[in-house]
Amino acid sequence: MKTILATSAVVLAIAAAMYSQQGPPAGAKKDGKKSGFRGPNIAPIAETGFEPMFDGKSLKGWDGDAAYWRVENGVIVGETTAANPLKQNTFLIYRASKPADFELKLDYKLSGHNSGIQIRSSEREDFKYGMIGYQADIDGEQRYTGQWYEERGRGFLAMRGQFTWVGADGKPGLVGALGESDELKALIKTGDWNSIHIVARGNTILQFLNGRLMSQLIDDDTKGRKMDGLIGIQCHVGPPMKIELRNVRIKKL
Image (cartoon, rainbow, N blue to C red; front, side):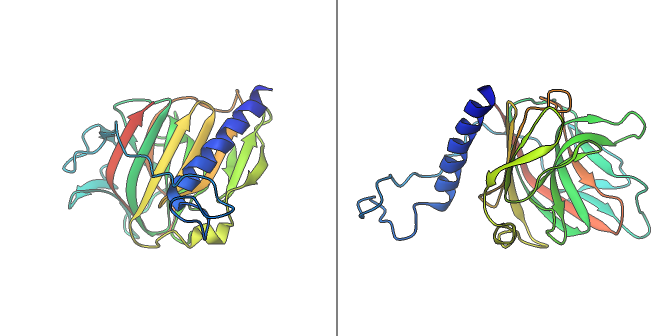
């Protein structure tokens, strides 16, 4: 019963969030008086209560391998090159807190291979600056951008366009669709700035990109999930890549 109630509440939240981003159905008047449409024209929620996580000048509060991370022109930069490759994924870790329920917003630009944003994560004991946990995935070809993945854990949890439920066995099951993957992919700007918005509340996690809900999951795997933890940014092993971040901010709920 608790899972059903939680799912119902989240579905309502999704509907409200998508409506506020997209506006009323096609053909509906703003005053809501056209036949067949009875809802109000709900305005997007104003951004309040967020605190900066990046001062625009230094990596104060963050910790990572200086061979790959720096601040340049007012943005955080993580970069690998052919002359300076990685043997394993490395992360820039935010040390100031281990938030549980929160909203995280930032702008990112990826050039090249692969990256991601870790939340509610822990550190690897066998590799410095390695992380384990939920990841909002990002890649240069937009195959995986917008999905939820668990780094060094349960793997794929919710693909782009999916609302999933993860049971006690750690395996995700599809609850419903948030949109077609290719339709959502078309909203992602390759090699340019994108805005990401992550909401983590209780056992529910949502990911928005450029104002659209991309993926969501309810995690009822009490053994596999984490309800709080570190935030981090990934430099990925493989071909050269460069991830840039700005306007990084958080609101604890």
